[in-house]
Length: 320
Length: 305
Image (cartoon, rainbow over all chains, first blue to last red; front, side, top):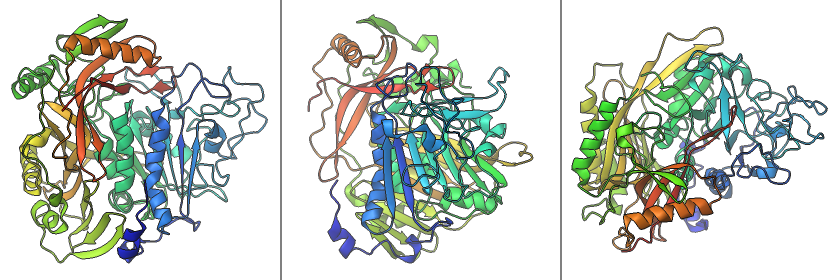
């Protein structure tokens, strides 16, 4: 889409005080990284029988678009896209969690050279080196199910794009957000099935990827399965457009929720906010945005926000 | 969990609203999405071209026409938004602009409007009172009244539902004893003739005390002409078309739930033209620890003006 420089020159720039609230990030630059994993099973790709969903990279582009506009207006510092083979599992793995020699993370179909290194702070590519990341891929969770069966630790996993690295970084053993010398992630947005099941939050699974002194404040994802369509891909762009200054949490629920008349058909977005007081967390949920990332204090408490009674496939009915 | 009774009531309501044309795949939904698991009485499956198609959502081929009454681009005029949608009369101050999106503030609201994209976001700046014993129906009516005053005619509304936004708190040592009410949200979906327009919605949020907290709108104006809302294909031909397209996509044959949709496309002037299509929802594929999302494919039906 062509950028309208005339509007920028003639219009009031977004440097106006209300719009240019300084980010709370410990590191000065504003950076966003988007990942779209659309291709599975081809040469060098993670596979395991997964179907390719071409629109996953479109979602990533739609999420990035308003940041490019901000960048052109001098209101953003860096935008990066890592799709398919460039979306490595190592970019979702903390240096302290991974190992360049271990094969513990690799699936049986992956090559013997597969390694489990942690590069989430690597410039321009890792999830933790930027302030915000978005990913659209296949996902899943493991936790106590509706029948009361447990599989131990509650966690989520995301399917990545390059079989030479971890094809399935998991939240409890690989992720660690907002930590380290170069880690300053504040907001994560995940378009994937079961990427934040209520049961994982209920079991404290979210504490396993965010420490008390972390910079990480907001995790937007889904309870249960989420559908994949051209309309929802466009919705991602609508969400990113509308969340520059306000509503980064609440807009996620407004735009990505959908209700089905029958059981098990809803899309159930959730937002988990980390911070000290309920007031701070509510403020980030309601009034935080890409350019107004609220300080929420010590990350010793969390709030999960959801639409009551939401009933997805692949997940329980949320409390109402 | 929703019940079969509720499903039946919804279908009855839909039948009344849609006549014989059939309904959107999901009559009360803010989206156009078909459902995965439905009561047996609402399922009508046919084997077509190797696919088990649930065609209960198609019924007959619709003959649609864009409603004469529709939201006008002028509805996104800032003064109108403040006065008639938000019912706020505070002094409005321009705060900034990025491309076509402007941000302004009064003492009560922050308002962002993009008339080209047909979007607006208005959020109350202050935190209001405590929870009150509210009638949810009154919340729904207030949301509809405000959107009507904003300029969205009833003829363009496909579905309206009010839901509770809940929050639950936890510390690293313990968690709260259950959810707290954060707000009421009324989701209003664009649609007519019983067929929704995916992605176009208005969401009105009320605080627990009933006061307006927020309005988010994605409702770009419809073009005056150029909508393709009728198809020359018969229902049988459409089913064959769906099966053919799904097979051509390379997916393994299986089950798909079908319904009608009006796919929006944005013109150079920002106005939207709608095209009748069939939404085919494929089931999620569970690989154990990872799940492939249920995909929804929009199938072309040679729709014409």
